[in-house]
Image 1 (tube, rainbow, N blue to C red):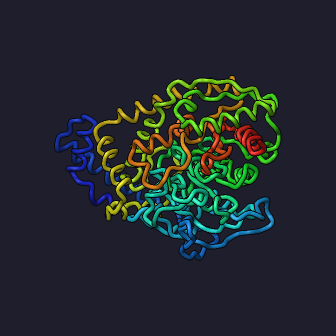
Image 2: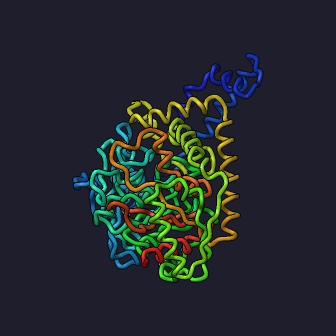
Image 3: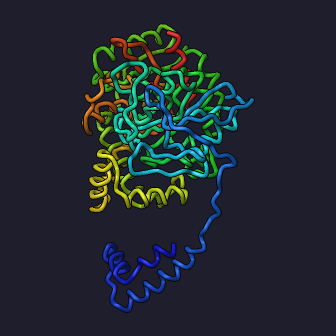
Length: 482
């Protein structure tokens, strides 16, 4: 604090005044400078005692054939409800004592305290088996932008595993873990689930604590499980959901439900809407595979109709605008989010400040920070416009879910592409066409395998209303039985 206050001089006061259109003479500048110093003295007293976890993990570098793991270790295990599960966590979900880079060449810190979701897994008996590699700062969808090397897809040789939770998808698909946590800004849990042939759950926004998670976008990010099947995903979800005192964005969120019980309930009497826009833009083979699964749900007793979600095609660019501008502001402020977010620890703030000092970000993240930072410095109109479109689409989704218990789409419009074929922002937007809309609406979404195309897994996505993860897992369980 004292170091920062030493940087505040008369020119700083004049600059801030100009930003707000306030005229200040020399006398006013002197008065504001003195008041600022008084305020700084008050702020200097704000020094919370650092809190560390009661454990520290001793990791070793990952060396598996798919480059799924950044670090390996074993910690936890016990008699709780997850006592039989090995669970990995994405590298931006921090574990005490385990260095994290978020897949970036210019960022690293070793947290003294684990993320809330990590502690909840340990408390419920899970054995943590490592942290997983990821696209740099969670900004891409192929697993090719990780500074520690590209992540391979155990399900399809020579094809991307999806991202940004690439290592989590690969670890589960390879059988290295029963489940793994990922984060999802525009599809980063569900896309690896689709490409790797596993189950991925994006819960309701703010349903799961993000304390101890290095965010890409606070208003879009979700933490959720990838797992070998819907039942395992449901078990992990039961453990990690619920309010957290360390994450003020979770205040008021419901307590955990018995999600496991929902998996085998069947789909009789459920009303399911198949989203026209998603089916129309998906590849023929993927669309046919999903249509066959939908026919199976109808045979199992569900009522199935086509439906439309106006504004659907715009949501990918909306997510790009919101995430890019929020991330540039977050990193530019060394992790300080001046609103109701998840809070930032001093260790993370120091690490981001050091990363900004080095400037050694990868190409994608460099472009993201510079372009969005420049736009943000002009005015806030692009962000406000994007949030307005997000609100409109959220109303559209909520209205559709009055008529339907669930909406269904292909998770991704294609099966896993070959390495090197998804390029730039256009490639990203194509892959997230069906996932990004439901980050905008904050509604829960489950990706479940529904077959293969030319030996590649195909994911079917089930979307339900806020806090109704149970119905999504119910439909996912029914798809697994087809």
